[in-house]
Image 1: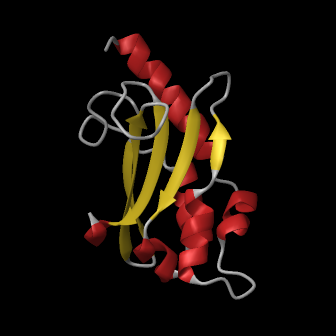
Image 2 (image 1 turned 180 degrees about the vertical axis):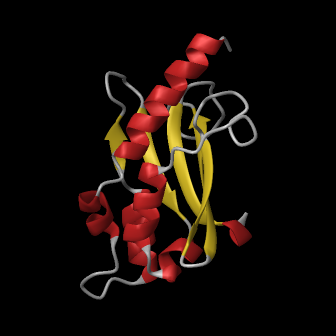
Image 3 (image 1 turned 45 degrees about the horizontal axis):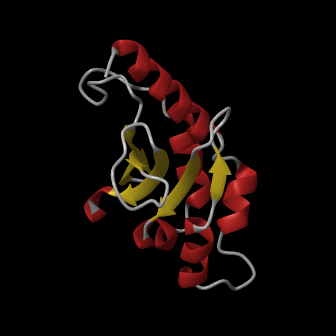
Length: 136
């Protein structure tokens, strides 16, 4: 990939992370007696159109992240992450980050899939996975 296309990928990834708003968080938060499985189902079902694109964006939150009970704080940390440098972003795509929340280490990463979300496709549909570091 060229540097320009890496820059464009980074821009889209940054736009998508910015969509992790408190409203989205509230939609999947443990409210109204939802079980962990119901929360995971709801979180996995979030699909949004990528700005100015025909691709889709899916958020996957692991069981450990749901169980920690800090979704709002975790989403905020992913949304506001901006410490990209060569060591954690060698291609300049803004597709991975790690942070601490309440002493626990979290990772987030983008993966790229084809239309059916089955196989890798360069600059395809995006899946943002948010996990505890020890779930990696």
